[in-house]
Image (cartoon, rainbow, N blue to C red; front, side, top):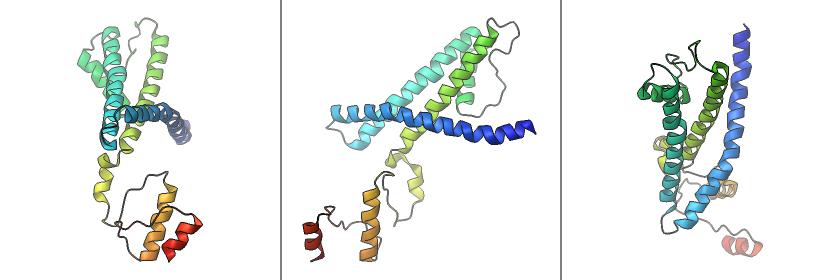
Length: 197
């Protein structure tokens, strides 16, 4: 009963913790994206986003898969590098089969410290995994969910409230879902009057 109650409370709290950390990490990540956009002006925005995603993914691969796998390979008796890499993948993708457990040997040196450091690695690794998925999701061309949209649907950035307002008004005024016509976005009194005229 305690385990079930702890899971009901603990899992949502953990997700909230991950979400808040990812929101904080999106600030420097977005700053890197803006830096790349300034440096790579000749490339279109999609290509810059793909470069940004590749840099983020390679950082994840190097610092949260390859390097920890080498450490586990060194510290764990009977673990090859592939076994260690497999443990990192299974853990950070939340599959968690439990067939490999670091520090399971009672003769492990500094076993308590080793367990604590492994837990910290898993926490930060999961946060970075969610961050990479968030960066991937922010690229609409790579969002496979768009493949299942209807023709009348269109992509609007989640922070584009003005765009949502304009599109909903356009559909209401034209009585159609055609997205090829664009009313002027200038909402000053003069332009509004000339548009209505």
